[in-house]
Length: 378
Image (cartoon, rainbow, N blue to C red; front, side, top):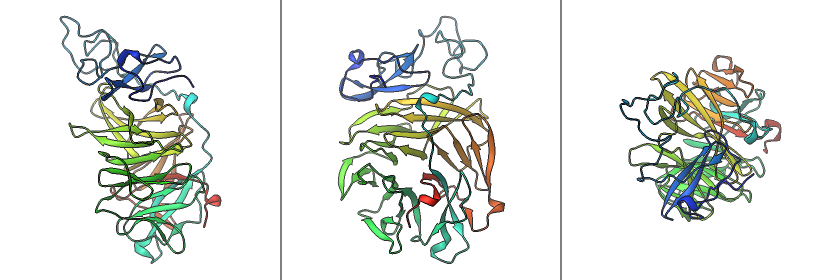
């Protein structure tokens, strides 16, 4: 791993160091005068100059507008449609390659939130569907479960009960953190020490009501070293990912404006974490009808590394990104897997469910990563 910049405040504008260990689509953070967070794009194998909001370069590419050129959206047609001096930039052309440099073997299991035929607590259940469909499943949760997460340190399952708070899934349903406000939600997670990070309103809190940061919308994941991947809302009503350090200082955010042709939407619930890396998705829509999933790895230096792009017929209602580059999409009726060798297959059908059926609500459907079912603690 090189010296790629990912820490806002460690350098200012063009004083930041660069790294040659980067590829197309990689984005590193940088500080704009020590106040705002900017970004550096990978150009010819190294991170370029820091682009800051409001300086005219934020999201820009190429040499600037050409004379006598009518700017349009950039498409893959061999022409410079947006008049910036670069042909087919902003990833206008599709690429099926999977960048293996930032993938890791996936040795766990993929789970879905569903409903069982049991009578306990509104039939909520969690079942493994990958790499094999487990005949065992977990149930007996509190009613109105909002989110399920496995603690990586020991493989135990926790969930967010909207009426109680964060609950450890044990026979006694042990309450870990009571809801201290009316808006406990938006994701939670654990660092390597097992310390709980959770959300109260717009605040990121840790342990027993220790406020780490404010102005967050969702906790996508907590890395082993205490960094958090969260989403933040922009003035234009869109959302971006942001990486915060253990003290709550924003290190970098993603995506920068104009990086990709078309619209981008973050999918924080798709995130899985392995040690000090997070794997997460964005849904890209362009050409009005084409849908593409972008899998990014957030590495140890808080750099967003482009792992793969995959055109899909639908983004579904729930997605999951895995460390080996695999993607899963659920539309409620079936799950489709998109694998690193660019094959794809239906991996689960709701019509074939025996014990548990996937939750097909767009509000509560969830896919999540954890240990293999045989390793899940009782």
